[in-house]
Image 1 (spheres, rainbow, N blue to C red):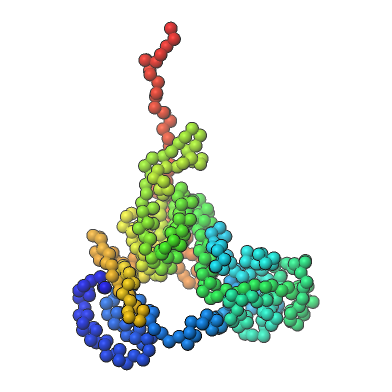
Image 2 (cartoon, rainbow, N blue to C red):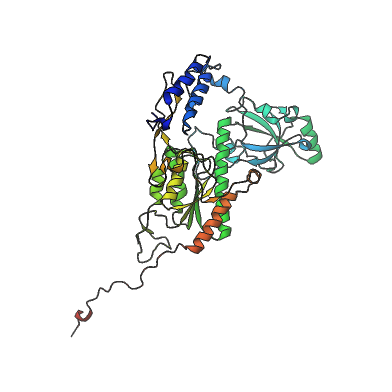
Length: 447
């Protein structure tokens, strides 16, 4: 299965003989995984993953047992606030409100948001509101509120809240659920209200927070561009796999194809196989323009052909977690002269895989099966074991990132602004003089 029949010069039968005695010492599948991992690592190849097979399953795939200790998430960050005998909401995750899945199968909003609660006739919480109880128990009786949310994912829970920011509901029958909260009510004129919601599973909460980061970063990109006096499109691709990735690129690119700049953010990208399509779209070039009697590309006319050809400048954001096809599309944009790369050196997987060499128990030790090469870099496209080096190296500081600063994005905007000053994106003006369709001296005249 390995793409190189010479196994990159390694004596593979000798490697097999070296690791074979360890198999007799394996007492469970996880230990065999360790042997397979160590053996495969001798190739020094990326895209080698060991997983699956016959594992011991104490929970016997019982979803109720598996989720018993899973901590439910409220899709928000909370701060313990003893003066209010509760936890203050400091932020609520907000994904893109225009593009979400409304299919009754995916929870897409924070359980504390108005969009999640309005269907049940309830109001959402706001930053500054305080949670003082969970299912009738004061949150101050445990070291952390999440201890009271254990096993609650997908199940209704009652929260007792102080609406210090969102304000009390005049129609509610306010009750007090804890003595501490009641004393604060007397002192500060705050009342406790009940709120029924459904916490998220840890996986769903992770997805929500990621989509909220995408939306926040897109908003930041547009804000920075507006301050710089330029127009841009922005799209983040979490991966390059299937309809979801295609949809993410389409809804980020096509509404913005007339902008001066475009930022393709493949940081954290897990790979896939849509690089050819993305590169095909970005390689389109305008060769003619449309103008009718009243409309042209500046006032709502048809624009130009090829349709949706991008005339501006492209910047790609990448980092050490950009992997596989995220690296492939970055290398392609660089090699084809379509844009500039900003960020840090990527993961380093330039030989592709098909994941079809399964073992007898259903497990797999994936083999990089499909070699890639070109005349410039040779095998691996300069990616395998090396990663893609950006044109401009910018490494985000972890603490600055935590506080909301994105140096890589800021540099992308400044680079686009400088690029546009050097190479403005100008729409060709239509010729003033139309073709003369008269007959000249042969024009018919009345005698």
